[in-house]
Image (cartoon, rainbow, N blue to C red; front, side):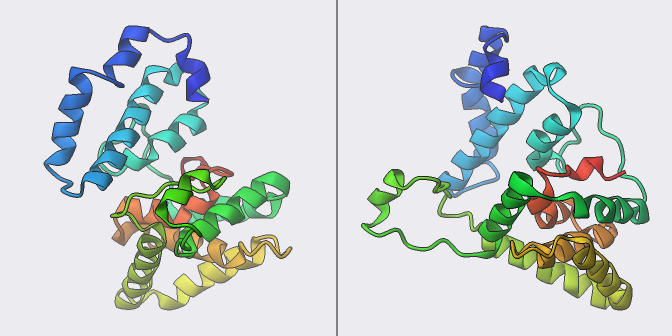
Length: 226
């Protein structure tokens, strides 16, 4: 989507975020916080994508831009940022849209959920064969989405127990699981996880909430739950 929009953008501005001094400056800033070179490279690429999205954001739907900007939302709110509505309204909105998941959109939710819950399997032929396998998303060695997702969920459970909100927390999970489609694609439990993350958002870093919600982010952007 961005490639198409950038074809009409100011080429000098596009170049500024893909080569030259601006990239070196951004890389230096990232390197001060991230020591793993592969993780730093992934962060730089993410920063470049967000910068290019800002360049053409007037041509994008708000929900599209918010989805692209999401990796930086907890560090620096994006342009036009609005505080999220009360938790009960977000939960109600999520429960309202869950039954509408069908077709390709639901299949994408299931695919992202699997990616976040399953450790990568070794590719036959060694690491060099990965480039020849279709639909294999490259992951930097220092990044483990499944481990991060699992750790975030354990943090939510611990926070619910420590705050004495376990019963309400479970009720939110159950409500989402009941509302999600029960058609064999395996997203029921992930709907409960997402609802649990939203319910405990007041005691969690925003990036943890967004990570737990990620399977549904393309279908219903978190920012659209109003």
